[in-house]
Length: 304
Image (cartoon, rainbow, N blue to C red; front, side, top):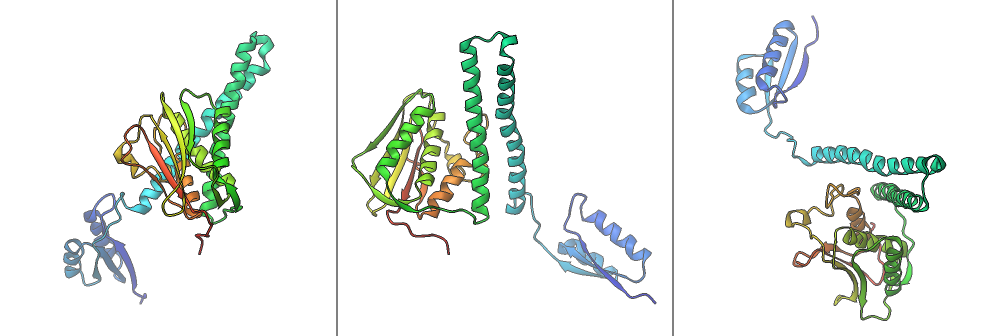
């Protein structure tokens, strides 16, 4: 005589519903007299079946993982991110390859100096975009693997802000006023200056990107709690209230039609949190968008 075999059967629903599953369970019981089934699902589905089949037992379960649950959302966002990445990589790469090919054959194409300069500028801009994309992905990976390293030293925040402003002025064609305001002659803090610059540049470049006219202002002050308070305010299109709660989440983008990975602000939050600060969007600011973050003057690791 064969040993009885017990199999657990999911009757939670699936694509075809409990009725199909139960019909299959009945056929299996009829085909194998040594088979026993444990039916897992809603009471109204599994208990009546078990009551009339002595080799079936009911295990009531009421929770179903819906498509809106966090694990599924995470997978969906990852898939959307990978799809977005293929587009974000391909767009600047196509420009680089296309205009490089054009320059290589400029004698045949009869390009003049202005056209050549324009092609070189397109290559430069797209190379910068591609490099930023790769750096964002590497940064995110390092944070996720706890493989991130900060070189903490004492720096002058006023000096860093001035240098960041000059860097952006030299690197981007600006259609708005870019200003730095502070009443401080200097403000010493313990930080990784390259990471602080990364946060400031990300916030400022975002502001410039979404501001068609007016100004973008970086401000530095010493907050009442003794921390450094940075803010970046613009006169751009602003951020809808419904987006403000999501803006620091990974893979979220301010505008689907503007190049970007949706990682920049998420990485900013990771960096600011790492040094013990806080970052937020000022919901009361109505002239555009205003991002703020704090940075302790003395570094204290947030790692356990």
